[in-house]
Image (cartoon, rainbow, N blue to C red; front, side, top):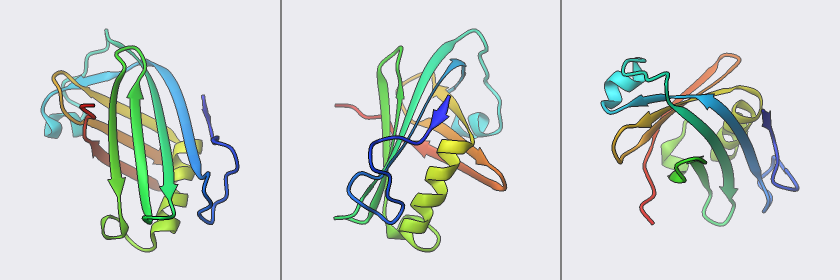
Length: 136
């Protein structure tokens, strides 16, 4: 199930910009990021329920991506600034948000602590990201 949520979605960068997706089913697990990105180390016996949130902070001009696996309660997050994107940050936020809301999100769950690999595909866009684990 994919949908945009979070209240008043204002693509121009208002205070409540948020994209949200929650999906479940089988997931992948991987330890080696290179192998994970190439689709190796899959474990079809594991079940995961994923939640992904995307927010824009207009005060700091940053994109905040949060990923949570609901069964294990593990969380990962990544903050992206102007220097981390191609072009204008608000345009990138909108492209990424539309991809999350309307596309397909695939996850590679790390066997040990570490980053989760997120691949978001929508139309001709494909985003591959390594999202560090939150240790709080």
